[in-house]
Image 1 (cartoon, rainbow, N blue to C red):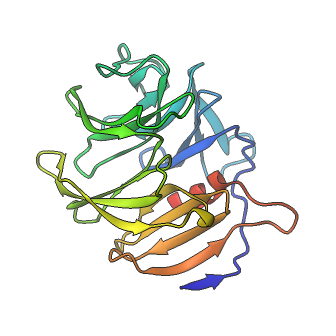
Image 2 (cartoon, rainbow, N blue to C red; image 1 turned 90 degrees about the vertical axis):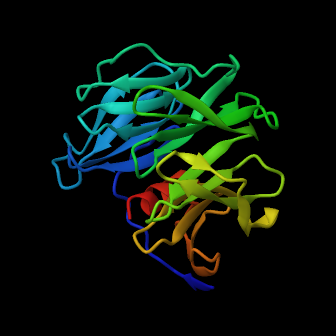
Length: 261
């Protein structure tokens, strides 16, 4: 494993309370991201003037854990009260859909779309109690299916370029890891899964995850302020520190960088 002293560039001084899940919106030509606790969906447009570079496109008033662009415009959201759809102007498109059995003190956290357009997102309890959450799949037709139970803090999600493997992080597990699941792209189902990567607790908390065009996994670590790039065979190729000269950069900033690469 190589360690690089990389000079980090601040693309956006967002001052977010809890930034999460940056996703490139090709149709809008910008990077969407959520500020979970503020309940806001933002769009950052690189190269735009200072007044247009970042705008709040949805101000929901309750926690938003993740968002993704919809094929025909607008957004799908994973929020404190369930899945929501919104138009391209941020206006609501129907009522929220709360999965059956999702407790009142749970909210959605991270989420992502699979290569076929299904939106996956998982939950976390307000007190982060062990095993209270789950991982859900929202199909384009609006059906919701619970795919995993016993989740504590659902986090990073990603798929291999061929769509045959799903990677997943539960940041609340006592033994931190990245799991790899065989994925049936046609059906949207997973197998029993296996441990791909295991981490020592001293390494920090595995949090954000993204898969690049080469099939490599980028994992951001909360608390230890670094990012790692792993091969699909779990070899750690590179480790980047993201501490500033004066103070550590929050793990969410590392996540934004990896997710927009």
